Image 1 (cartoon, one colour):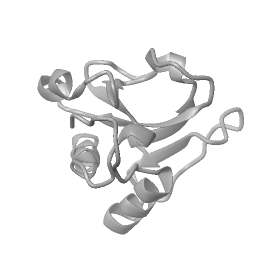
Image 2: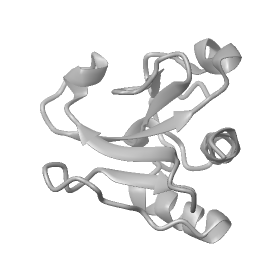
Image 3: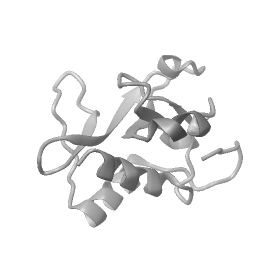
Length: 126
């Protein structure tokens, strides 16, 4: 999941929504009036398998003043450390750091392994 700066097809929240709609029949849920851009991805049972939030970069230890979209996904603890790179994959923001990761969408290649991570999160949270 190592992503270097440079030319790549940046992942967008709309692409994530399209993927989960097509593959899992999931529509984003916006449960918080205070955070209207926070979109939860849920199973029909109500359990979450992902959440897209727009947060300040400083929340992840990054520089910048404009909010960025992040995608939180559940991940196997034994591979979390190998995925976290301080560039586009971080410990889960506002989640259990052992079991969740946060991906910075604008730094994540849509052609990369992200869809495998979404699928993994979907199955881990059933």
